[in-house]
Length: 139
Image (tube, rainbow, N blue to C red; front, side, top):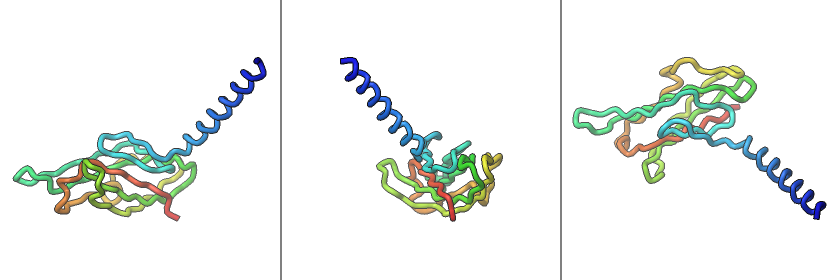
């Protein structure tokens, strides 16, 4: 009986250790309202999803701003695309790509218009409910 309990306990520890290692490589993390980041090389420091309205109170533009922290433990060049979805998870548009170079362990201090802001002014701007930022290493 004691051997069986020991074997069972050991098996549980090995399985939990195996799965906890898998979770470290998980690449999806949500942290800001309406914005999800998919990346294994950067994390979001700050992000916002802004809606701009015309004189008739209709959405005419959607703007996504973001700042990253490099967690790749090396200098990286990242490619950023933003997938825009409606409330039913239907893809409306993809913004980008844009490219940013980040030194090892660097955290962006400000939002730069050319690099950290992407916007959509199409006829379906009013349909955008949430976005997913996809940041991958550009080789």
